[in-house]
Length: 113
Image (cartoon, rainbow, N blue to C red; front, side, top):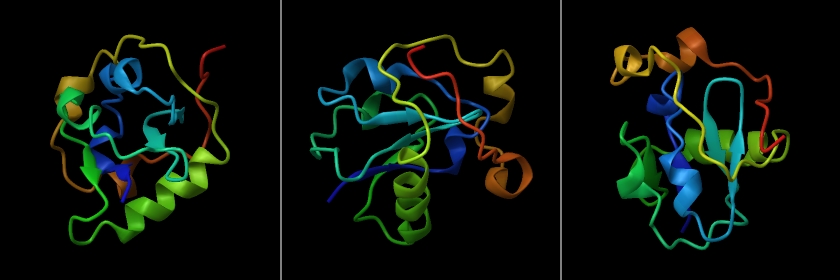
């Protein structure tokens, strides 16, 4: 089992999760975070920290797509361990449907740089 970041992170990108992760397995894209499934130790401390409830265990149904998105982009995006402010309009996008189709960006974020 691993945890995955799902579409509600897109354009919300709260970073409370990166501060509590004991193994630094979060990676930053332009408008969302992902978890590296091979680095995640399944501790679960990140899940309750996410204000957008975008982090789920991969044992929940219908998360295969998100496991692949997390694995693919964790290999491409920079590691993030330092919490920064969420986007100014994060609350406006929290819970919005079809965020992946509307807003997903494959571009990397800045990471810890």
